[in-house]
Image (cartoon, rainbow, N blue to C red; front, side, top):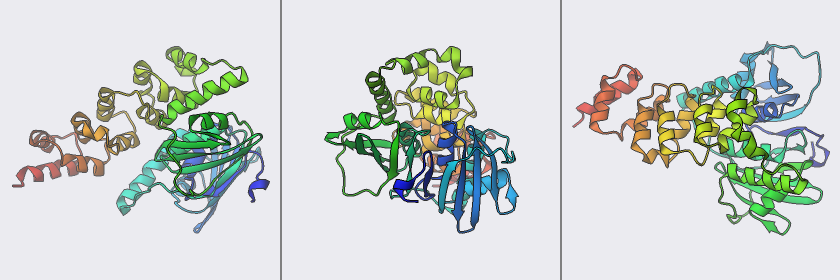
Length: 371
């Protein structure tokens, strides 16, 4: 479908450009009702979302969670997501979308580790739609939380511009004569219009250094000022989190986790939702002590531990490396890699430990006996 013909709230693109799990997460967080039709070399399937919850998936003759997980593992193909209000769609899936994404990610990562694959960021064209049910802030979060490289081109009256994201951070924006944060905030005023991802041409300047979480907060404040809204709405929401947490939606918890203080983070880390936990470790104010505590926790999702292990700054902290290595929930490839850099004393303790995976303990014993 041509860009100019894209229907409202309709999104099309390639799986290489936008993972189906990320697209599904965005639609669910926006509480939309959509049918996502996916074309792949192995067949054509569909995922149905009703009011922000995945209710059905079909692939070939299979229905329910199994074909959903199969499609979420696909690394190539094309998708078209369009509004769907059909009451005839069967409810073959009843578990929450957060749980489904966690299980799908575990399944996909396990397969990638076994095959020795790595899904690095890709930058190319192939994702398009209209702003409406999904806002530009949702698209920025999609790019940054998935740590993929995107160039969003936005066309809306009277604004036209671009937002550049790389490795989980927005680094440049342009809108008319504006550049940097001013351009970013101006573009995020748009409530309607068209967007698409485009290929990177040349190397734009780095005009934005602020973490994307703070960047979105500033854009929200700017929007409130321009539209006459309450400029301190987000801050008030976070301050009252402790009493309203049980009533908050997942999207609200994610936003609070990204910008909240230490007390808020300590409460939200108990949330079983992987997306909330990931948002906490993306909070720019998180301390080394908090990261060490999270790294040693057996109640956090494996993906959280994996992201900590892949963050260079945190790997400079010995306490964090040790906490990850001795945490039985830490993915084994990460634990084995970190084991090499521990002291002989700690390696001996791991060699004798019955709480770590057998493969890790055996490797520790071999390291002890090496000359």
